[in-house]
Length: 110
Image 1 (cartoon, one colour):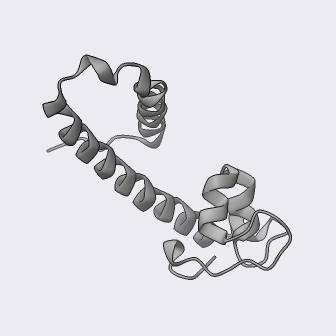
Image 2 (cartoon, rainbow, N blue to C red):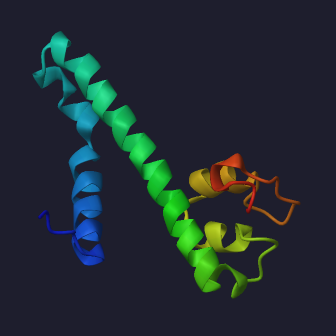
């Protein structure tokens, strides 16, 4: 039976992935052209996994009532608090006080 990775171990893996991607543009020349497509596919797979994980984390935060502890309309305040502006803008449609749009990324809950 496969052992389930604990949350702290998964967070360490996420930090390692972030670190591995930092400055990747400086080393792409080292790979042959035949490696670029497969790498692009891996990054796309990673991006989809990241989006799915964000939805899961937001769902857990909503279920626990964490998103209602901020001065949020719906759950956008929590997203803006924890996500960089580029992510929160994509998920909420706003990083300012203007009315947020409902995002399909979180099932219209934010």
